[in-house]
Image 1 (cartoon, helix red, strand yellow):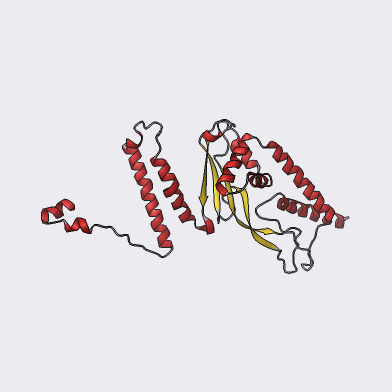
Image 2: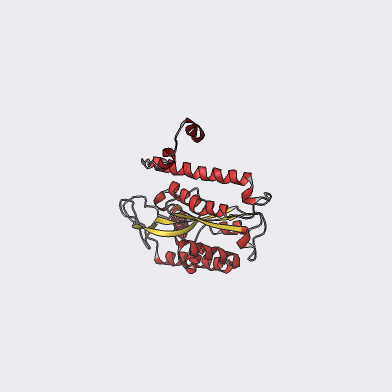
Length: 272
C-alpha cells in the first residue's frame, strides 16, 4: 500500500511539472531523477496524451476569453517585437502567468504588464534525464509574461503602463494604456536605457504640447528645468556606461575660433 502511495505521489509531481512545460512556462520543467540516479524517467504515452489534452483545454478556455482589449495588446506586441499576431496570441494563452493580463485590465488593476522576448533554455520535446542528470535542451527565442524580478533580463522588454485607475475598455485602451519596448540585447541594460531615453522619451517630451496644470507648456521654466535634468541624467548614464566599458572618449569642444578672437584682458574677462 505504501508503494502505491509513493508511486501516485511521484506521478502527481511529474504531472504538475510537465504540465508547466506544456503550457509554456519560460523555465522548462525537468523531470526528477529516480532514487538510484542511474535510470532516465520517461512518462507513459498515455500520461503524456492526458497532460497534452489538459493543456489544450486550458488554452482553448483562455482563447475564448480574448476580447478587443487583448487584441489591442497582441497587435502592439506583434508590431513592436516583429512577430505575427497569431504567434503572440499562442504565446500568451500558453503562458502560466496569463492571469496577470486580467489583473492589469481590471479596475484599479496592476500598473504595469511586462513581457520578455529573449533566448531561454528550453527542454526538447519528449526529452528525458541522462544518467548524469542533464537534459537535452537548447536556446530558443521566447515571448513570455513576467513580473520582471524572477528571470534574468537579456533581450527585449515590452511593457504596458496604465495612466489611471479607470476601467480599461476596448474604446479607451489606446488612451489609458501606454506601450513601449526596452531593448537590452545581450544584457546591455545601460545602453538600452540610454537609447530609450535619448531617442524615444526625450524627443517625445520635447514635442509634448499638453503639460496638464502647467499652462505655459514648453515655455514654462519648470518644464525647461525638468527637460534639462533629463538630458543631464542621460549624459551621466552615457558616461557611466562608457566607464564600465573601460573606455573614455574625449569630445572635441571646437572653441579654437572663439579663443582666437580674444584680443585683450577685457575680452578674457567677458569670456569668463
